[in-house]
Length: 205
Image (cartoon, rainbow, N blue to C red):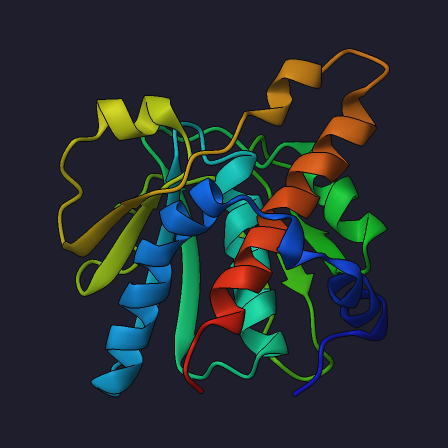
């Protein structure tokens, strides 16, 4: 299965050589976890967790699933959750659309559901804000990947997880209401995409 052409072209521009050795070291725990699960021929479940499940955790979920597809890493399911429920922030959706994801919105509630398509035939990624232990997410045999320090500090134990990994990202929320908002969200998305490209480039397929 191939990514949608605009996403494929975008991914090919991402330069993993730009990553520092410090970031590579941080990402190595995730590489090791995925490779260990593959060696055991087990389904890989990744749950990206941030406080509000509105920005960073969704970007990480979407890019991890897309980059797994790009590198043909099979039997992987990516999820996201928070320590509380809010909504997917609209600029996250706009940012993903800008690089080629095809996204449809269902409902007009305060917490709508989005279907995010990244291939022609693969089932879409389902995105909505929820707690990390929501019934939609895995309840056991998953890696809990903490994407913000607040969730990392406030959620010292993630029930059901077999591995806890901290990969922190600066919150693009700092740019909300400023002229730099679009640029900051694109930068954060690109950073996460580049790091997920590095991770999945290291997976034994």
